[in-house]
Image (cartoon, rainbow, N blue to C red; front, side):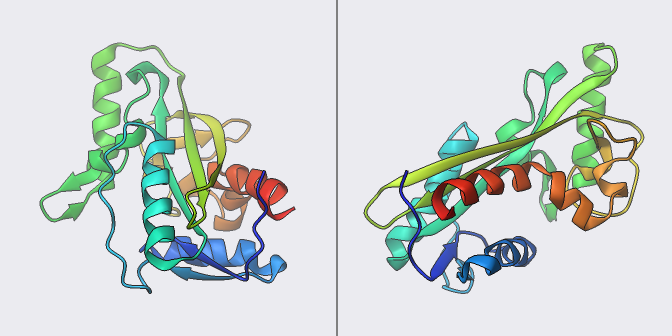
Length: 202
């Protein structure tokens, strides 16, 4: 496994919240982070049908454009009774003509579950795939997940995306009812990051 040896990591995102989270995780390693947004990079079209495929598109595009090692993630919620949907289309389910509406997207998940006739518990997991790519085309892949179930009605005002309908295994609250730092400690992204730190930064 290739080790990261630089002092600057490009994060292939335009999301400032995600950048802050990654900057916090990288701090102990003396690595500074810069976002694709700060570099003025366009967001590449995500044309793959897997989390790994889409994360690779973003990471390699950013690494090639800047000459820096680049980190990208692709993540989503996978619902067993919906044959894994929305999966890689997690964000797409929230798209409207005027931006993303996750309340609508969560309603869509619930409607599809009701239509399927699937019995509860509606088991599901959040998945996160991280790809760390170098300008020479090499990459390392790290996958994380957190098991749980879909609940209804929505609960909680913290977090983002589908957090109000996801109750992680071993907890009686949804991600949206959790303290942000508690959620970050057990999340799919935390799992993937732990694997990356142990592999390419350890």
